[in-house]
Image (cartoon, rainbow over all chains, first blue to last red; front, top):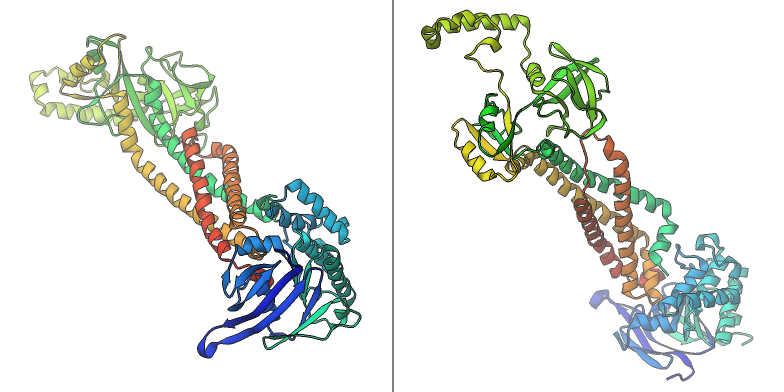
Length: 235
Length: 403
């Protein structure tokens, strides 16, 4: 089943409403991401980036088109070919603009819960969660609640959670928007590191053009249309 | 990982305050049940403790606990003569309110049939039972009297020689036990002027009565004390209590006494049933209704609290769904919190109740079957009241975590 592609989308479209109120949020969006590849998705607000991200994240089904993850056809139009929530848990990691950690769980518990939901035993999940936090440089804040962590630390914990179940693909929606440029650059480099070392495909929706050098591929969206952008410098 | 306990720990202050609030509400529900049991217990206390098989009361009345009953004292002798009767005693029982030590003192006066009954069956917590025919009393501690205290009732002064616990009448007044003679003296106490006026009136009535026409000498006795008048009985008593001899046929004894035209009889059980279904019934229904309403209020309050707690976590729930948590995890989170809230609330209600209920003006009796029933209701309320929150949580889209 594994063919080296983390994700393949084919002509994804999303239409809201019908008749006079019809809005095409995304039209024929096609993207291919290999394992270990870091992809940036650029575009102005309202371009359809988040619609695309939620469609390939199996949260908001497309009106038409198909989504293959890890070589498996998951969505064919609005029809799913599997239990989406279970599939999401096993194959997809999410990172958002705000870290989106569960406020009543400590940093390590936020990572641990993702593993436990996937069937990992508590003791083992805790050990692996600590290793991930250590890998991402926030092991010393493992027992802190999200409110006690800085924005950058929160994002590192969120990345650790996204990596918890060794996903095929990590989807990040403007993960550096709430961070200063230095920390933003660090987080982007972290994604590149994670993709290359963990072998996960990474799709990052961003407005931040300063960090484009870390990406292997760039896609751009405007008015719901997606096109492959210029290859970033240094790649 | 137990998400419910983690969430509770995170917002412990609010959860604790909410639980205490629920606990106090449940304590009131528990207390209302206890008050009902207390009323029932108080009402049947005398009947259960006094130890009698047959109550003989005024014809067509329901006995001294339900209404006024008057029977002549010589009924004791008539009852004693029935084959199979071991003992027959007078029963005098009435409520008075007097002034004592500058405060109103309301009490139920119980007459003990001296010397047959010296009050050995009374639940004494201090002092002793009656040792003489007059001027001694055993008082319930709820009356606020102390051992050795002297209390003037009518023309006589009585000394408190014993203190009982939980001897309460069906109306909630503490019971004071004296001999039958003293109880009657207290009940029929009249001033000297009233006695003189009655004697004068008696003479006037005698002149017009057929009895005096037939026995003119009676008129000479009219202005003498009432107990010297052979035609007039001693003051009447409320009822006569009969104990059937061991081995005797109680039904046969009852049948004989029931055949007398001037009295009605009740067994101990039927007297108890009369009290429960009569005197206590209205209070029972009233308290029962309040209990139902309070339970409903507790359910609504719990449902709203759980719904609010769920709304506060809605983003976390969406996030949990996003990272793939199955519905059972979400459902477990809310249901466990509901059960935490219910169980802890119940424990708080019980612990607080143990401290507070003894200070209530009326007895609050918590019995195991009521406590178990309430625990079951609380568990049911916890589950039902969490449904609104669960419904809301299950409708949340993981999309909300993204936005």
